[in-house]
Structure formats: C-alpha cells, structure tokens
Image: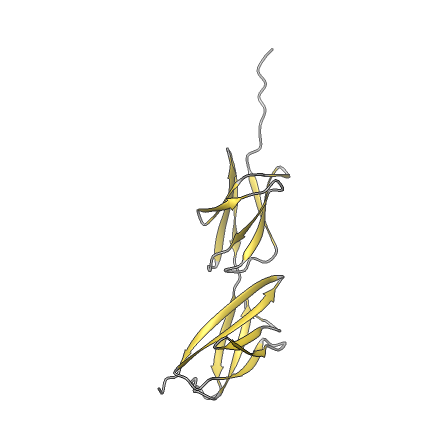
Length: 171
C-alpha cells in the first residue's frame, strides 16, 4: 500500500445571526465546507470568550465599538469575520436652547442614522415617554443640577440602549 494525500479544508466560515448591536449578545455560526465546527475557540477582538457547540454555534457579547472581529479556530482550521456593529444613538435638544430644569426637551433616538419608533425614554431612570414614528419624544427635565436621559429599544430582535448625561449650566 502506498500513501494517500487528502486535502482537508481548514477555512472556517463565520456568520452572525441577526443584527449585531453594540453591547448586546449575538449568535455566531462557524462552519468548514458547510459542516459545523464543534468545540471551536471563539475570540472577540482577540480575546477568547467561549467555544462553539456541536452545531457550530456560540453566543458572544459584542463590544461597545463600531466593529468587532470574531474568530473561530479548532486545530489547524481557522477563520473570522469583521462585523459592523450598530448602536442606538440618543440626542437631546432643549426647546430653550440649553437644558434647564422643568423645561421640555426633544429626545431623538436613531439606529444607524434611522429614526427608532417605540423606544422607551427615561429621565433619571423613570420612564417618561415613548418615541413616535420619527424617533422623537418630548420629556420634561427635573429640577436638579444634572439628569440622565436614556432610551431602550428592540432592534431586529435585539435589545439596544443609550444614555446621555445632562448638566444644568446655570446651577
């Protein structure tokens, strides 16, 4: 008998399931030639964060960054993907020009530059409003030196949140 040389595929394909949102979990699936990579080491931006299951799937939490590099390796097989990570953005526009206590401000929630309807808006962790179709909601600022305005929304099945601190410039 002679020796037989067999080429073994080693290029791992990594796919994300769903919308990659900053600070939130996302499922990734690793395959080689269409077959799942089980027990593969999963890294996010170079840091090992877990292993794939028998189905080649793992859940990883994405960093608060614009991109995330997801790599999966097992033995000589390795591969990765750079994900564009989306984030919920929040702006607060005081109707008085500056954020003053007991005045109204317009909060605008956007995701990748698009308005986010039905986002829950809170001032100092108290729910106060929900954004409309244009991604905006009116809120009243508290009588305090500072306040925090935050919003949470469901984006493509994933949760997203953002916060913006405000200071009263006249106190």
